[in-house]
Image (cartoon, rainbow, N blue to C red; front, side, top):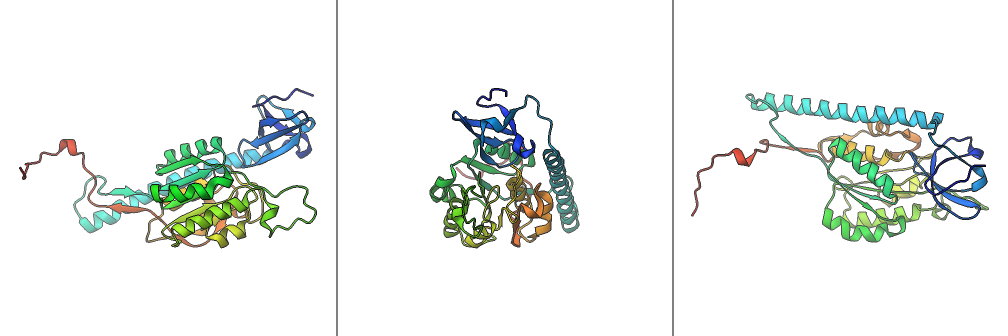
Length: 301
């Protein structure tokens, strides 16, 4: 058996090497491991771990990567189509426009993540998609308290609450309706409740909540617009970002189509679900100018 060290990439023999993990911490016989692509935090016997230098992606990982690429391309195409529609509508109404005639105000995201590496990946994707976002690493039990100060300060249109979760092992009478059967679903529910105390309107604040195997029904009942995981499956690390990006660039006069959202996630309908919600995207007129080029005649002493 290869010696396993902190930071190593590993797979689990007992699961057929289906998911690649990084070793986060170790005892003499056990390791805490974190999925590199899926929001999965697990413990495993060291004897079950196989170190991989250059992991060959499993079928599950390969499917996720293909779906992630397709989702990004679809979001970028949606953005391009939206630009063209906006420009065509304004040219028709204002007749004599050349170049972009408007400025954009996409919905602003506040993203709380219980995992710092996933937070960085999420913020990188928001930037790539031109979604304005503030992100904070907050451990799941502290999220509700953190939101009491962050929400009035950031004033987001969209709130993402995510991190690690999962159905607990070793329960004698496993009850999937019971929040005590989940690692962090109760913390996510409490955070959603705090957010809904701050803003009750489902269209004024869109909430995306949950992680792998989270209590989907409890999160919706607490006030989330979108949540994971209806079938209690693993969700991809970036699924919440795709949902938030779709909400950010859907016009406020339009409803975010549930099927559209699910098509933009990697996990699909078994991993993410939700309710009808209006978008947060606005346009403004006229387009913003470069003030350094304006020649202005002062009119005041």
